[in-house]
Image (cartoon, rainbow, N blue to C red; front, top):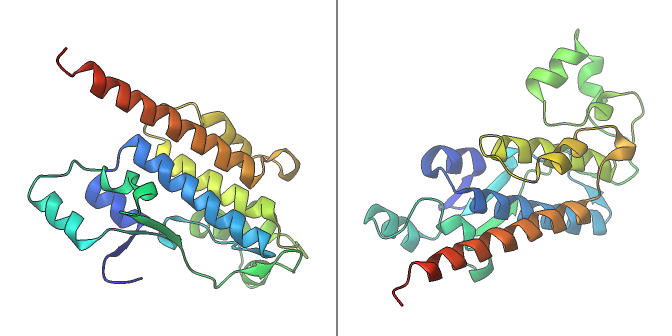
Length: 202
């Protein structure tokens, strides 16, 4: 990460982004993972510490001066004000290749503890013998990340995020997730515009 990049844990701790900003981040994560899948690779380790949010220095100064509300800067991805990036390729594997994680639990006394306490965002099937790297495992991780980001807030995306954490065959695809997040961004943005217009003097 560069000097002004912050991982998602830092962003949540320091800025408390709005619901709209959180959904924008999830949409961009889906975009990045989908591009990786189209190149024939699975990330296999999508989590808060692997999502980077780049905030320009000028915006940080504006925040300190009270000219920006918390969360506003993150929602401006379309304006290239802030960029969401995905990094950490330690576990990245070609789609269909043997997953790496089974080697960890082979030397562990308690596979379930390793999965639930150390790597809860990883799909359970990644810890099974001879599991192949797949798109579905990244869907699981995105679902876990989405629930972390949006759990404190009531939202209509709860059902699709719940599906992400279900059995492999019932999980949605990355494009389906992207469209769900994108539609919600459009909906929330239009509501904000509507509220802004309603407050204008006639």
